Length: 353
Image (cartoon, rainbow, N blue to C red; front, side, top):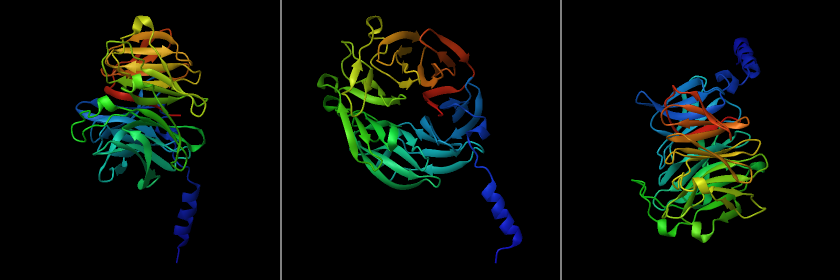
């Protein structure tokens, strides 16, 4: 029989507010890095200050945030053997996610709009065939998987009405040493999955760009997908690293670099972001540049910064991170230092929206 004390405790629990991101200092960004020989995940304010820092079991790549709860999932660099769900309020590990036998994580994931599901980019280890893993929140039990629609999926983002867009990079890799096995036969694509995992739309690049691996994605306010590419062929001729796609409405278009900056990115785009106003930023840690474009992909500016890679929308501009531990405020007009005392930032900055 329930006691009066137990009954009252139950009533109190029902009225307790559910913690949200405000309870951990209202961070605006997540970023993985390396600090004092430790791998960490930081929450960052709009001014680049750390609101929380949590240790990771290994090198992180990207992370994703629950839409309401102060919960983040950090992913290992591909091919990954771990993902960690973290309570950003207490620093506690909520769950350790491991791909099923024969699968590997591929560095990225995203929560559903309502926060009830986590989607993870994965591959079948031996063939690199793409999968999207489905994990239930809040217990992070794996409840299934969908085909990603291609080989080597990397980034995955939300689209309106419960859809997902997948960057299938097209590269088959050795499951042990990451060596690339099919560069002469690559077929990268963009795939849209419905809310029940069916393929609703797919788009490929022209045949002369099949060696341009589609890696990272950003989605603007009207559902246009901006995508960043990494060229795996000969770089004697200029190759675009930026593309735009309007699913269900048009074929993908690539955006050639401006003449002055043709080879500045060295064929490699590391990350991409879009602002609410439509500006697009593309980074290249190999080239040491941030390139800014308008909503149609026209080049506006190129800013030099060594080992810059992380990029996220920040108001009318962007926040950028580099491997030396610096954060930068970036607009079409200038790139200016914001903070220089962070960890060695890894590849990505994730905006909390």
